Image 1 (cartoon, rainbow, N blue to C red):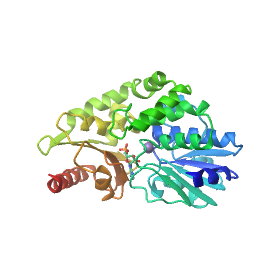
Image 2: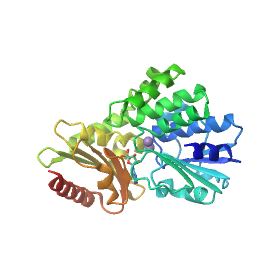
Image 3: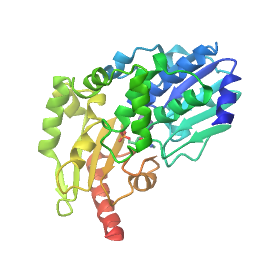
Length: 316
Ligand code: AMP
Ligand code: MN
Ligand code: MN
């Protein structure tokens, strides 16, 4: 952490890079980190692969996207990003930088920068960045709400098993520093677009239950998205919903995206989701992981079901 802190302070300018399809933790961690750099007078840009998700717009923040042709910085910081491939088209910005830093909490992160702080015991990258504020002796102030948003989104409102006593202590400090918990939770959990709910209904109607009720698998095709009017960001909660059916150990959502298939997996107790998804070139955490593959979605659905069955066989 100390090495990271001094590397950050020495940055002449910085580009902050969250993983592609940036979620609440990724976006909020970048915003908070940017506020820290600003206090030290370091110019920075947060560069995203795609425009920010609409449910995170309440956080504010200025973002560049790929098209903005951000120049290669002195220091590049990959945030909440488990491996270099998840930087997508922005990889050259990272690779070209003089100093490459990694701040992350994915168990599958092997460290791909000059200085890497990877703490899989942290519930969110925001928890690590909150620690950075502490270490730097900087008050949270305007970073309190973004950091709280990171914690709340990656823990599903402090319900998932990644939530630790430390997470709750950090959350309490952030609330004391002014994070508006109720307002943040309303924005990220309680204001769902109608299209998202229509998609949810269709997916839950069509899902497949197998392995004696232990596995729930569903697919979202491009056609279903246009039928329901839902967008890609409206799919991110569906694997958790599948996992949340009583008796289900593993919930998997497969969705078509840009000619590829994105696999999203949630597990309860038995399967190590990160290890499972790593076999498809993906990664993540023990209870929440993902991968991106090529091919036909219904063929992949059968393949995933088969491999989950085999994995149960090894574990039961
Ligand atoms: P998701 O199911 O997309 O919400 O992702 C769950 C977790 O797995 C997140 O922590 C992601 O960072 C990670 N993850 C998702 N997709 C991939 C991928 N293609 N490669 C590596 N990690 C992934
Ligand atoms: Mn993330
Ligand atoms: Mn995260």
